[in-house]
Image (cartoon, rainbow, N blue to C red):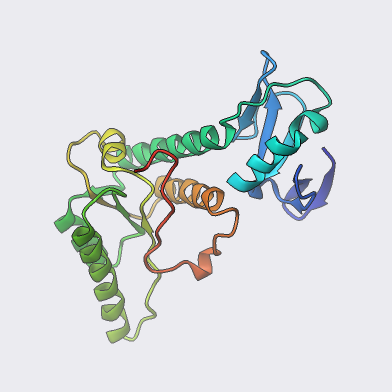
Length: 230
């Protein structure tokens, strides 16, 4: 795969569109030892790589065109459910990052505690179970808006506060090691930034690489449901 120099290092071209992008805007794939195509999400696996845009649609199109096989110039088996596999791997990666943030003491759980952290001005992001009650989601949104209004009343600029909704309640329980988690919040810290980085990548993948930049992030951000959502 042809590389081009970029200000942040080598850039790569999408196997489908041929658009040249930074590695963070792409997904790398390699042929595994068993001849099966493997998504290399962390870009560390050995071997010749092929790249596709960070987009479920692009991956599906690459499968349809047999672009992976042609680019790798070798016989490789491409799983027909590759788009869903990537989604699941990225979700698991985000879940593991959330568990690490929790171990670092950066996660607060429970509606009242989350609401208090939002009001304190020290909340980096809110996490809401995707299968939680609509009333709870509405109340979280109200808490975010109240915090913004309070900042404005003090002459401060209202800060966009993302609401991460890629996890089910079961996902949150597993990551945080506690039962009945519907709402949580992230305090600032490197581990919390790791959660948001993985969340943004998954959202971009699910929305075909069209997510807004951080500067234009909406106050309450929702994501399309994963492949196994009802």
